[in-house]
Image 1: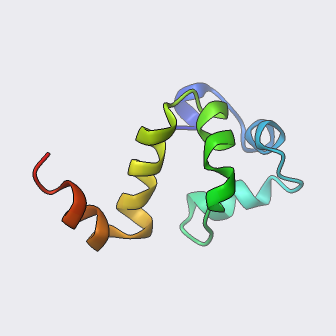
Image 2: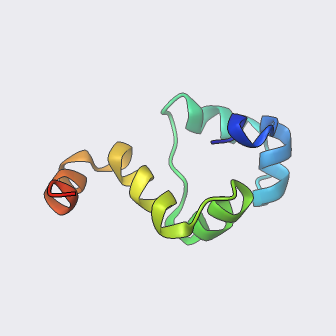
Length: 73
């Protein structure tokens, strides 16, 4: 999503209020998680509707719950 919006890791970090751009790198490599209280801010920065953003995160953060909730879609 970051690349689709032509954002560098530093730019995205600034948009979401993260002090270190390396946090974005950690997320992209699967070594971190966005805190739930920041989902809306990240969705806005990435030009994605919040519900769609959270649903996409759930695929990675909790795939079993995602499957149970959205298997019929």
